[in-house]
Length: 272
Image 1 (tube, one colour):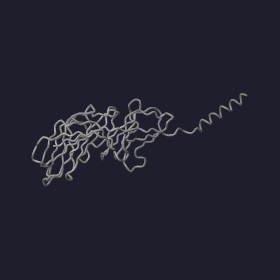
Image 2 (tube, one colour):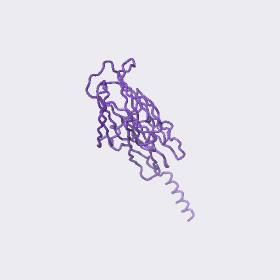
Image 3 (spheres, helix red, strand yellow):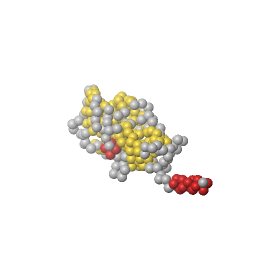
Image 4 (cartoon, rainbow, N blue to C red):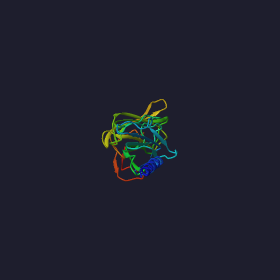
């Protein structure tokens, strides 16, 4: 009998040695509305363990066109904080911690439309696939130029604003560094130009926006200053009018509330 028991124990140990490993965890990241490729072109992902230490030595980078864009497969056990940031900057976002994501300027554009997921995921759970929703963290300022005569030589638009933030806290989805920001756009003619920011320490704020049309030598051709511009997360504030006109007449304010496919919650149009 003793020999039979030992044989059964040995058989059990052999069975354990040949037990199939658990499937890796697969996480799928998608915006609340639309697909990753429609809403952003780059995805940065970092995981943090219970001590706050980074799991990956370098942030994971995915670009549209990459195989598996919008998902991540990891072979880990335990609970981790996942921070995923979707944007369209040429350079990757720096994910310092679950409380700080930073961006650096690239080709005059520091911020683009940005989506984020921040939350804990149990890698040891029976469910081996998570589908997580990424929410928009940005507010948009839009300059819409109506039909008019454009002065010769305009090559660039410089947007300078105060009151917003270039970096944000994924846990609150709010801006965390109140500073003066400057971004430029190549002037391609009359039309719309978008600038994104993260409302500082709140879901809404007001900024002072100064826009300068410049020539190739860096000389200002026309400048407009808009004070107290409302910036609300997931909403558009559009200033529409004749940018190069000589008059500074008061502009009418038209508020529109609607839902669009890209998921913006509101769109305010200010005529100048």
